[in-house]
Image (cartoon, rainbow, N blue to C red; front, side, top):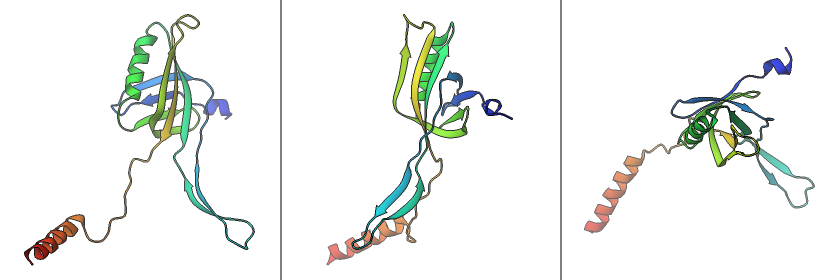
Length: 156
């Protein structure tokens, strides 16, 4: 199977569940490595602490065209502004949980390319579950102990 046969249809499903299929231009993805550089006196070179990677970004130029392109483009723009996690079905990189970030650009070239809306969007991959380490003592216990300590100090 060639790379051309592995390319899939592209779509975005909004947090509310509305799915939009679209055509697109060239694709790319970006990622940041989470690293810290340490240098030491009297030691040539550097120690690099590697903490994995950040969220990947998928910038896309998306097109809607046809008789009702303007209505579909309006709905798509509204869907991109929804709060929450959407699903990007990327033509090359698979299905990804994303949030559109930064400036969402829509352009309607009414004179030079009528019946077409062009969107420039950057989708960021997002994790959907996150847990933070909590101290062994629950917050409510800490608050209750603080109130008891305050009451004792105030009565003295």
